[in-house]
Image 1 (cartoon, rainbow, N blue to C red):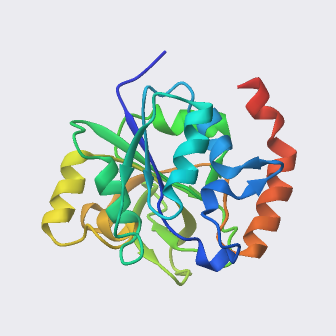
Image 2 (cartoon, rainbow, N blue to C red):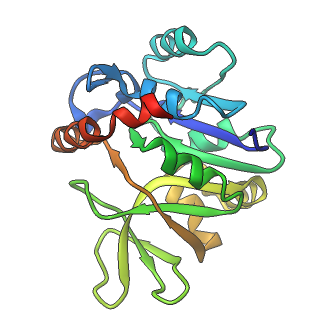
Image 3 (spheres, one colour):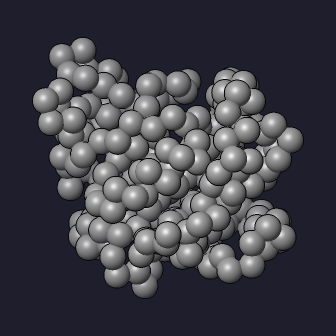
Length: 228
């Protein structure tokens, strides 16, 4: 069953910290480009948009070899802007809910679908698993994300924010009007906190150590994509 939602995959960046001189969307993990895992997990989504920048034609060519109905949006300022700029560009023309999925995040298919089916503003969190986590500080009772921080606050429950979020377009527009549309997605989200959290199982590929951990994790779960 399809639901009225737009998913934006932001993969315009250069992936400098991974150090492979390649956009992370096309880095092979467990034998396939990273974005292939995302496309397969989202094959049931009708309105899928991919924001490109660095090595854009390579990304476009690969995505079209897998799926023909994807909408592509360009972030030509990918060297100077962050994921918020890509997400905002991908969300243009949407009137309802929109999901932001970073181009370096692999989410187990059933977890991603369950997250999208929440059909509400919500943030995907997980147990800390990367070299440089951005913590989502949460209220223990309500399970709402109340703040983001680079340091874990011992007085509050802290999970790692995965970069996955579902927002109303009106929230994105409001943040843009505050001048928050060119940095990171978490900065775009901050004015609208608290927002409910949803725990997911996923791995981000940012550094070489993250890549090794993600490949080990994916090797244990890759059968789920065949069953999905």
